[in-house]
Amino acid sequence: MAETSLNFAASSPVAGPRPAALARWLWAVAWLVIAVVAVGGITRLTESGLSITEWKPVSGVLPPLSEAAWVAEFEKYKQIPEYREINAGMTLAGFKAIFFWEWLHRILGRVVGMALVVPLIWFAWRRAIPAGYGWRLLALAALVGLQGAIGWWMVASGLEYRTDVSHFRLATHLLTALFLLAGLIWTARDLWALARDPAARSARLTGPSVAVIAILLIQLLLGAWVAGLNAGQVANTWPAMNDRFFPDGIDWSGGAWMALTNDPFLIHFLHRWWSWVAAGALLLLARTLARRGEKHASALVVIVVAQMALGILTVITGVSMWIAVAHQAVGAMLVGATAAGLHRLGSARV
Image 1: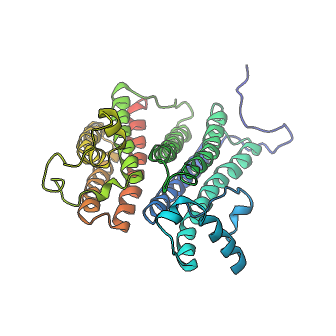
Image 2 (image 1 turned 45 degrees about the vertical axis):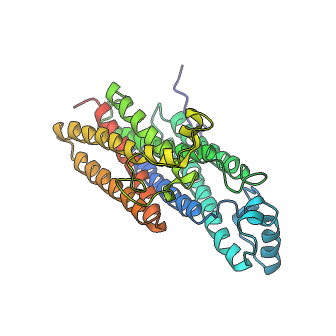
Image 3 (image 1 turned 180 degrees about the horizontal axis):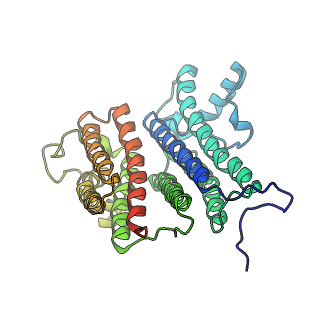
């Protein structure tokens, strides 16, 4: 059966596959995803995520354009538990400030979607997509749509009974974004290799690569739970937590599993110490790459060290917003660098 792709009818211009152009496009979109993740961190840290109580994919592009429209949006916000229990008495100016970050986060999500879909249609029309990549690119575009739905599912969890969003749904939202980022970079590197060598084959995950992914995934999940539970604020000392290696204050009354998945003290503890396991795995990956003569190894080491330092600074500054945002943004870069490193590990050596 002929390769199914996104190439259009025979009437479209014939330009031929352009893997290098496709790779550059996907790298640009990957940087946009990192920007969305960073703004998402700001949205969380400023408690802005519930300021927009409706999901309007089209009309929601524009913020309120009149004072009456702002008042109407504010009245909607006043109906949810977060306002009644935490922000009662907030001024309209204060509402506008938190509204901005949530609005910007949603706008950037739409920009990522457009940055994937519109060029994808163009490249397909120009028949520039190499055989075997059409469905992969379509899946990446669909993942952006899924991410938008997950984002609203997350917000909805805080509109009726809670004063914040579910940390489980927040973790799903963040990890889906990071999976998209890794997919963009992996596919871009496959396309770049194809541009250099038309006979190049897609990289494959190796056994050690799967182990690295599993270790890093645990750390990312714990980090998302820390953010969702505001667990970074339960201790501002390092390496001890409030003068103890293993923290006081863990609620074991619901059992070990409930504590493991919901207790901010235990999750903070696990996140800060599992980071060393993740760092060790990534540094071993960097050493393997260095032995293969890959220049990427040194960049991976720098990002790992930077991320560890930012994590410690986030704790000892009492979750200073811009340091915490940098920690989340560099964490996304670390995912991208890891994806690139694992791709090199799984590529056939020339």
